Length: 200
Image (cartoon, rainbow, N blue to C red; front, side, top):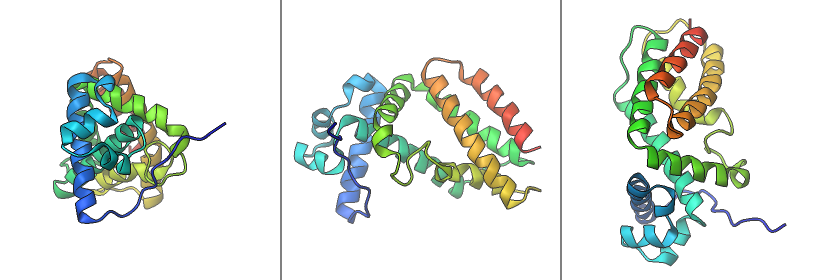
């Protein structure tokens, strides 16, 4: 069975990094307005003001574009946490606040997150060994661990790593649930309970 082409992640030059950022922002805009069907290599290239061959230098398919957008949103969440550490008397309170904010945002843009996770599921089999892909290991729990460490905590590093891995998988399920139409507030409450139990 032939394998689908895959774009290997690499360090980009400033110009290529700027083009990639423009493509990702365009994917997010198009998917927010029109969902999965609004995102295609040609549509994204045209809206971003780049050539189709240039777009293909950054992604091999629309699903790759959506996967890259999903990863970028995760990276941006981590950057926000680093620049503005969440407040809260406990690690559970801080993490619950971040979860609530992200889930609420996902609930406000259902078409975007439906598209992102549809692309995620379609791309996943070919990307399981690519470093940094959400859902394939503890690396995608980094921002969760950073949130726990952003204030006072009585938890040992081993406990933080373990809780981060478990909560990252729960959070993935929570995001898919919200993207599928489940009430963000209800999902946040369930995730908050799990967070308190793991970080008691």
